[in-house]
Every structure is written in C-alpha cells, then in structure tokens.
Length: 414
Image (cartoon, rainbow, N blue to C red; front, side, top):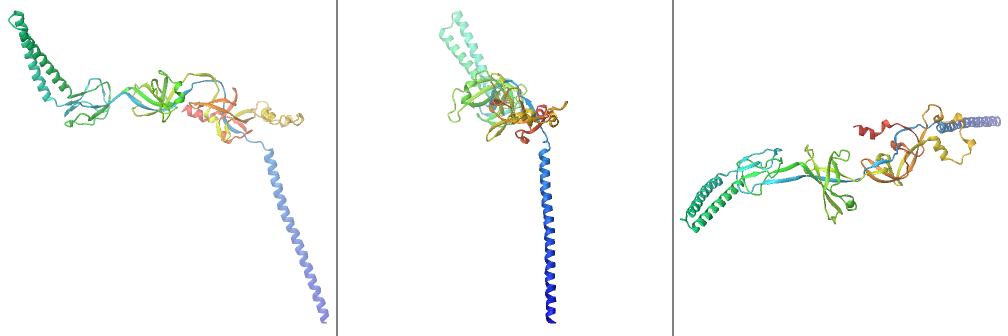
C-alpha cells in the first residue's frame, strides 16, 4: 500500500513539473513575440520616417539679395574729431574795480565793440575832465606864444616851452582816456556770449573770467589720421562730418595739416573749417569725420551685411539656378541617370518660379566705406548675392528671394 502511494505521488510530481515547463515555454514564446513585434515596429517606423524625409522636398529659405554691378566708389578717410569755434575766448577785465553794470545775458548775440561790462569809473572821469581842462589851457598859451612871435614881441624859447606844455597835457588826456577805457569790457569780435560768471556790485581783478565768447558761425574740427594716409590729404580737400557715419550733413575743407608726425601715436593732426550758420555744432562736441578722396569707377562693392566672416576667411552666398548647381555638383553623372521629365523640379514647369540655391563663395575684401565693402576677388559683375538671412544658409540650400525683408531697405526708408 505504501509503495502504491509513493508511485502515485511521484507520477503527480512529474506531471506538475511537465505542466510548469510547458507554461514557461508558452510565456517565453509570447514574450519573444511581443518584444520582437515592438522592435520590428520601431525599426519599421524609423525606416519609414527616414525614407519620408529623404524623399520630402527641402523648404526654401526666404532671403534678400542684390545683383553686383560696377559702381562709382568714393573712398575716404574716416576719423573722430573734436569741434571748436574758429574764434573763441574767455573774457576778462584789464583792471580792478567794482562792477557797475553787466550789459549782456547768456547766449546773447553781440557785435564787435559792444560794451559787456562797465566798471565804476567816476574817479577816472574826473581825472579826464581835469586833464582836458589843463590841455585846453596849455593849448591857448601855445597859440598866444605863436601870435606874439608872429608880431615880433615873443621869443623862440617861449614858443617851445608853450608847445612842450601843450603836448604834455594832450598826452596826459590820452592817458586818462586809456585808463577810462579799461573800465569797460568790450567784445573783441562778433559772437555768442556764454553764461555770466559775475554780478553787479562785485569787486573784480584782472584774470577773473567774466564769460566766454564764441563765434559759432564758423567752426574748426581737429582730428588725426594714421601717418600712412598722410600723402592722401591736402589743403582745401573736402571734409564731411556729422554725429555718425550715416548723418554727415556738414561740409567743410581742410585748412591745416601738421607737418610733424606724433612719434608716440604715429598720427598726424588735421584741422578743417566748417560753416555753421544754424548753430547745430557746439564747441567741444565729438563728430564723425570723413575726408573725401577722388572717386573711382568700375569698383565691385557689396553691403557689409552680405559678407560673413569666419576662421577660414570672408565669404558670401551667391544665388544660382538649382539646375545649374545640380549639373555642377556631379558632372560625371551619365545622361541616362538624369531626372525624367516627370521628376523635373517645378522650375522647369511653365509659369513657375525658377528653383534657386545658394553657393558659398570665399572672397577677398578691400576698403570699407558708408556701409559698403569693396570685393577684390571671388565674385563677378552680375552675380546675385544674399544680403540678409545668411544665418540659416549652408552650401546648396534652396532659397526664395524676397527683397521686402531686407533690413538695409527698412533702414534707408527710415
């Protein structure tokens, strides 16, 4: 009985193990199927996405462009200058005294010889009156001595003494008049007065600055240029200046060139004279200066926004037809491998805009002036150059030209 029970138990255990193994195999097969399906789906999805983007057309980037044409180039020398009045002084009196009257106000226009300050001159006027009385008396005595000499009753000695006395009195009158004149401060030239630095009743001494007088009708501009450009400037050359390089509305000419080069800075000082009828320029003001040089014809120049600088050099993006770029990209491609008419781009269809791409071209640049840069090598006349939107471009990128988005046009309109 016990042996039978043992056999039955062993048989049940074997059946249970066999059943568990079958379940594990089924679970493993199901797991493999699920994992395989997920992996297969992901592989299929990635390949589908890759094929879609490989066959999808690349969207054209909107840029602005301009055609390169030979132009008249006006080179120039640019510098920073300081404006000063052609005539400007700090006014002071010649003698001590109490200020009686201040006869000007700030920013007043005065003419040459106008009285600006009147000092107390009562003592000097009294001295002048006494001197004039004595001079008149001595003149009368001299005339009487001449009359007596003419009648033969006067001597030559008396005449000479009377003449000396009359001359001395006249000189004394001139001295008193000069002292009296020193009690007035007059304008040495016509100009605009500054802010008064004195008041009526104030005691003033020689050397005390009363105010400044500036002739604002004509201004001088002092600036410096490198010694390498000294041979390009000459007396009488046209100079333009303004608050910045885009607003040079004042024009003048060079009136002075320093014959000595500064041994420390290697710069040469230049002085120009500019007419300032409206008083828009002020002494001490900083301005952008440009010395106009002779114009040159047939120069290829681009807006500075067209040129991109990199570690490998300066380059531009040239807009060209897409079919030309395709042919140039693979000239060895056999004719039978070319696209069929059904696969031709929209550029070949009737009434469709031609497909355009950009070609990255390295250039050699030269002088820069007024927002333009001279191109010495790399492009030719007639090339269409991208002027805005280069940050989204690379070699062969499809583009669409729309000059309405050109920042240069917006700035010019403003």
